[in-house]
Image (cartoon, rainbow, N blue to C red; front, side, top):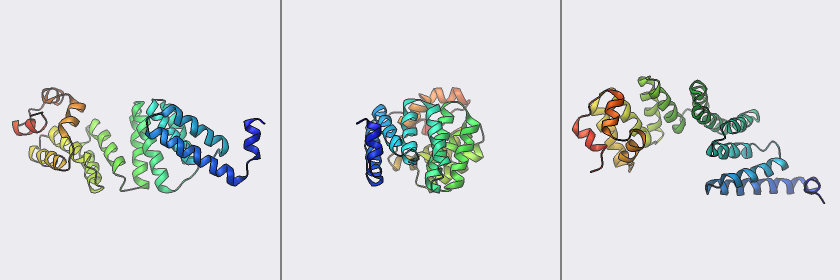
Length: 222
């Protein structure tokens, strides 16, 4: 018997069980970083149940991790078409926004992050990412507002990112306070700063500022 015939012969209950099994195994592969195997399982789930939105959402994440951004965008858009609950819909907009951002389509990324926030006003990750977009475009007031909202949603990273905005605005005390709080909450601000900017001299050259020694020390290995 062909595999397609076997699928057709399954009861609705059996198809549902098998679909979920493929999705859960695919998610396990995804969490292990085995994105190709994850996608294979999500594909199998969708063969059984073509409108299973979780499979589209998770497959979109796997495609995103593989750098297949157009396929990721297509899957996140499919989640939206299937009209899930507001939380799932917010996730789809947020992750599609990330994919658009990686493609350099900043306006679409901003639009999707904003839509995610409309659907889920306390979505800390969406506020943080939109804040980063605003920071890159020089809209510092909106960036600070988003990072502050993300902080209310318990995002530790938002303290660091808001601190960077304060540095660019040369508001040293605010920056020092945010970096200190991030450090107390166990965020490695030195590693974050090095990953993003390299070192203090590089940051100063890029943004035309001269950091006070006390702040420069906070962002440098002892």
